[in-house]
Image 1 (cartoon, rainbow, N blue to C red):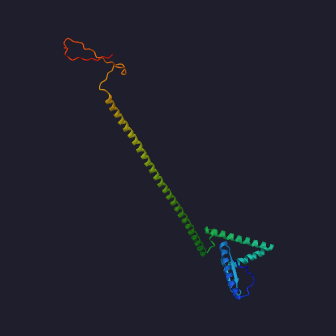
Image 2: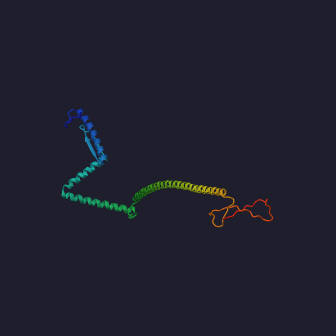
Image 3: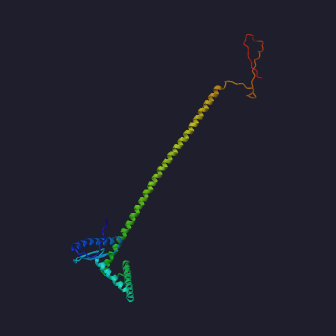
Length: 251
């Protein structure tokens, strides 16, 4: 079950009243602190208990918060009256002009101008400011240079990695080219060897199948040849016992 609604009125029992005060005071201080942190607000809280004890919380300084409150309260009261409003803005314009003159004078002194009216102490203070400014500028310059060096080193590492990858790819392509060359020249040599071997076999077969002698009619080698035995003619000084001589006639 949910809590019942509490009637907002004075608690008669002093003990219960003190316990409730302690709990709600702590809760109020906690809320004030959370409000100043979450919303970047300047908060000032003042609590007086029934026993005249003081409890306070301020996000910066209680004196600063009270001074700011009084000033704004006075300005608000002046703005409600037209004559007071004119005087207020005149005073604000005078303050702004004075601040501008002070800033211009400080700037000229930092640039090394109009130093005649300054005492030794003022010059020492000005020198300290310049040294602090120069130190800050040098620290910022060193920081920027370090960051640029880191960035350049990072880019150099990336480029180095890219170069390594490209070198690996080039080596792989070269190896593939060498393999293709070996394969192409190997096939050519093999085909040439096969052709030479076939040519040698054909020559050998031709030499085997070709007869050691041939006949020709002196005209066309494709014309048919007619062979016929002729009777030998007797000669005076030859005996019939001699072997018969065969002659070949071509028709």
